[in-house]
Length: 205
Image 1 (cartoon, rainbow, N blue to C red):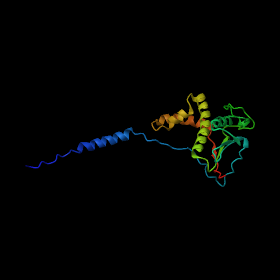
Image 2: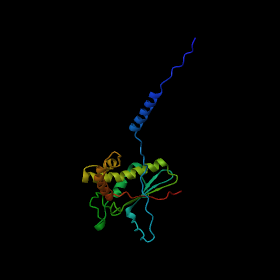
Image 3: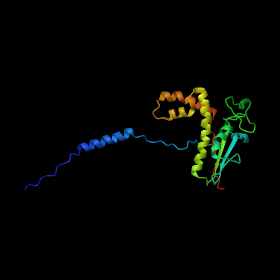
Image 4: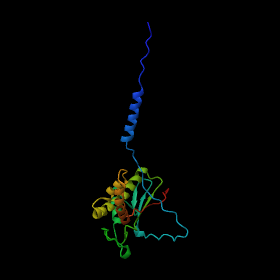
């Protein structure tokens, strides 16, 4: 009896299918672009440049997180849920007069607090024992305070929230013409409430 040859499988079509699946994957997959915490390091000081002005204590909002993750704001214990409101109150105080006046601030104008959001600085001091989760939570609340004030002014000036404009600007699918229109608006709001968040070197005790 004659031996039959094994039928040959045509693999040509399988290669085409695999190639089509690869193209489908590349077209439909969205790659997350997690940029982490956005921070800009201060530029290197020029030796010929005059020293920076001394920061008045009233323009400094000190947030301290110890090794037990306890939150101390202006040397007083505070719950995390109250941090954002306290930061907004400090940034929006607007107690300045003359050149330091803030005509868009809606705060209490407390003479012991900040004069203008452009000179107000939040100083965050962490301990080496501070947990990463607590560190991120505190960062989120402080950034949210800036965004709350920026959204408020943006809604008044442009009838759209700052965070919404920023998300549209950072979207890769946004056209360059739209970005050109958004850029000056975003810069204007950032000038009104510049994010001055100073992180001192963590303390070991």
